[in-house]
Amino acid sequence: MQHTVSVGFRVAWENSWRTSTNESNYDGAWVFIKFRKNGTSEWRHCTLDGTAFSASPGSDITVPTDRKGAFLHRASDGIGDVDYAGNSLTWAYGEDGVLDNDSVQVKVFAIEMVYIPAGAYYLGSGGSEVNCFRAGATNSAFLVTGPAAIPLGNTAGSLNLNSGGAGTLLPATYPNGYAAYWIMKYESSQQQFADFLNHLMLAQATPNYTSSNFTGSTHPAFQPLVADRAYNDLGIAQATAFADWAALRPFSELEFEKACRGVNIQPVMNEYVWGSTTITQLLTLQNDGLVNEDVGTPLGANAVYRNSNGSGPIAHPVRVGLFARTTGSTRELSGATYYGLMNMGDNLHEFCIYAGSVSGQAIDASIHGDGYLDAAGATDIGSWASASAFGVRGGRYYGGATTNNEMRTSDRTGAGNASVGGGSNQRGIRLARTAP
Image 1: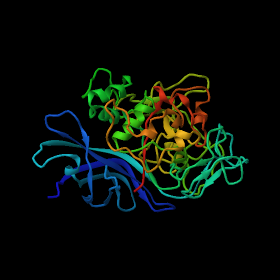
Image 2: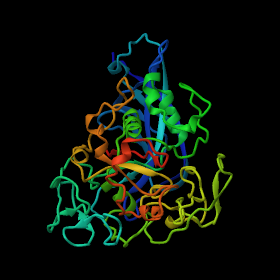
Image 3: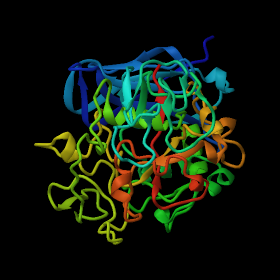
Image 4: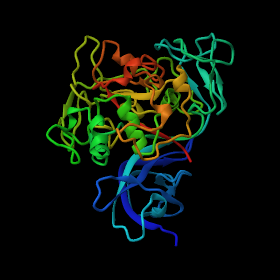
């Protein structure tokens, strides 16, 4: 007996695409399943059968070798909203300790992701960004040409971290960005984080609940105040716990730059993540806090950040993907990276794996979460446990007078930020997974 069962599901999302122009790039969904035996309160992660699945017409499914979830995406070029109703994955329930006569409840979760193809790309822009990567002793950008280890230093052929840092080599196991990977299209929303908390045991959820975003509700029925607003007020412990639970991983600061700039694209000095040096600050919102929250003034705004005089026109994170327009949009107007990631440079700082610490260099791109946390609600992946392995990239809705500079693709102001171990209302979550 195979001890498997088919789990059907429907998944839909807006602003989908697939293109073969210049590069093969597309968005998709990371789909994973949790189960709970009836009469218990513990939700556990489903292990999939890696060969038995069915995708709706027009879509494809790929199951990674660890079988902790699946990627679903367009099968051919196209653009626009998608709705795939006839999908199924096969749960190998026998591998998860479930008996044939057990009664269980299952839930399917999906997170929008973007595929970043393999290829050479540049680090640094040759500009004046804080601590930007350099090629050796020059001020030129460094070209990552393959998946091999990268020498560190100021000699020819080495990557200059330009801010001290430890070690003389980025190991080949470090996620250096050359290989293909998937990364979340948006920062995690309040609703996504509520779903995470609500499917943990109380003792696990308690240390991961750090925010006023769920005021008035309690575990296991946390209700977000603004479901689509980017989730904030957390430290690296909460971010890595979410990554482990969702069977994803943190992304590296090298992967950050590739996702912003693209493969074999010459850098623009001091460019923002949308590829130009032009920026328009959002001053007001329409329908603030509602499901239809939208750009107010100016209509051409493409970033949420604090004024250089120290005041902030927007007093909280905004709806994820706020700057996506239904018509007439451009990469600059939508504030999007080369591969279509939204709010990568603004709204909230995002945790990334630091290239300049021994603990950061020890993180392996092949290690993803397994869906489980320890009894205290922390990740059980040892290499993710050290705060010194992480920093932050990108800008934020509230910060110092130079916050707009942090939105530049190659700015490393917070790359080795030692304070990521504590909570902050200026940090959010975006996660990645090495492509199968």
